[in-house]
Image (tube, rainbow, N blue to C red; front, top):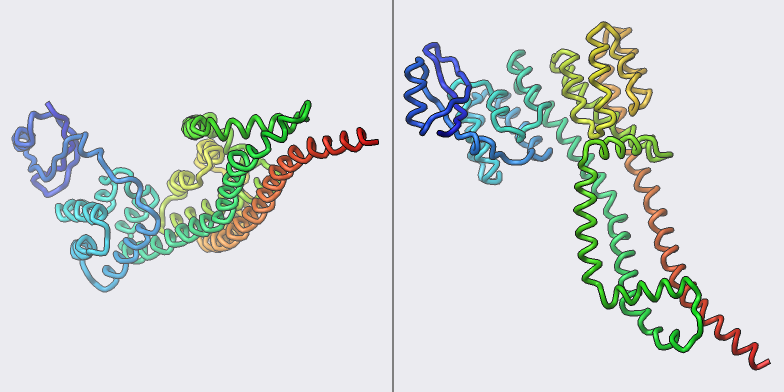
Length: 401
């Protein structure tokens, strides 16, 4: 017996989703038929769970923009999805997703539910925005807003990635310089140091490291791979990740800059959701999942409970450790003036700018730190080499006297 996830249509044309055990799809069809249902789609649970990973922001932006333009031009939703799924410039796997969505929409299923059927491919924010737009009837405008939202997210991520290019190159150069010096340069001093008496401790440490790199380099590669895997596993443990996320926003200088970035991300999401007419509690529940810091996200359940009990949104946000106070002040003004939606949009735009500045400052702080690290490493190597040579010259000078 296989476990099927199915979509069926009743006598009134309503789509019903469910799960059932059956030996085959034909047997499932007969079972549903006896219940007065017509089978529309059936998938084994193992197959239904095989989904693409979360769609990237630039692809979500393109999909939203194309959908918005087609709907605004008067094209029906089914026709719009058909045009998008037939676009040969889109990767085949992505086109298959759109084709699957199109098939579900043709059966009468709402677009938001069809998107949700794709598992984790589409983020909850996108699905809820589409669901809200279906209720209000402004799907084209909402899709345009989502295109703008994910375009900004993509550009910010690209900016962070490009800003980190120089530090990454510098880090690789540090490793390569150390490998070359340890594996090829220092072994040339073996004969010279062997003729000397007792070497200084830094020199002995350096020569041991050089010998290890030159003759047991494969051990370093193995330890590097194991260390990387161990780091990934350890940091994926919830308690460890929670502690690291707490430390991240409490570090001097860096913590303040990271708070700005997290606040900007939350403000942008919250403003998009609230502008779509989604209830504030639902907005908070969705927006918290986009922050990217488990320590900040863990505080939302208690805050949402207080807001449900009648506490103002500004007071609830003010109790969150990890957001800058500018967000609380703006929300408070919006509540007092009755223009919370416009204040959320305003603070989101301001925080976007602040987050870009914060990213540039983070990179500006990181570059000199790496240069100092490189200088310390090279300086240690030079001292360890020059020290015994200088000592031998001193001994020769003393002997000649």
